[in-house]
Image (cartoon, rainbow over all chains, first blue to last red; front, top):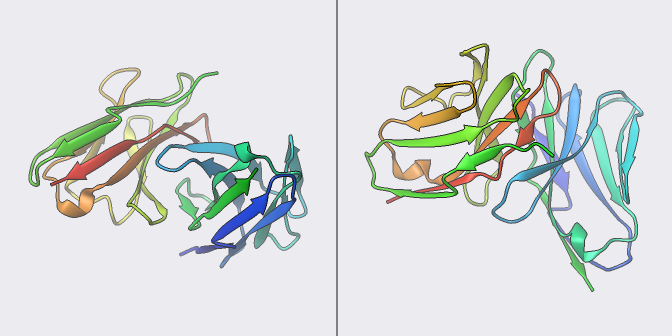
Length: 111
Length: 112
């Protein structure tokens, strides 16, 4: 079965700093999804990547999927307190809809 | 913006009791899902549902669990006889097709 490993597990940054979160898969990724979760709340969809080398941006968040489709990164530019939360990567396997999730990266942004 | 809704937000029950968790998926979505997240652990897939039948389920989804779409809007998860280890946050999700799954806010279930 597919395993997703996220790093770092937690991150504390000063407001305005850039940061990167990584998600590494044990198998080739079919679809890779980034979600944000506030503690004890639901998952908010951020971005989906499918093609090797693909890069998507929304506001100050950029996600990339490497060429071999086994790793994705999420980059936040000029972080703000509103970026704080838990970032989860999720993946589905070919022919399956079940998402497998990583353990999450807890981000704190200090004003 | 359309969103997935879930009720109740919190549920406390005694071990052995039946619980029903309710979800209203986004209206034009055709695929429905349940996931759970035990405190401090990963989000885990339970079941997916399409065209009024289960299309996929995990090993967690045993005979104690069932899903139903009783009408055109609701999607329910029933746990027949709850156990302590069923305590978790349960998330409903929906998607149009083989695309992005949109999650609800969750129901926090506590089994005593």
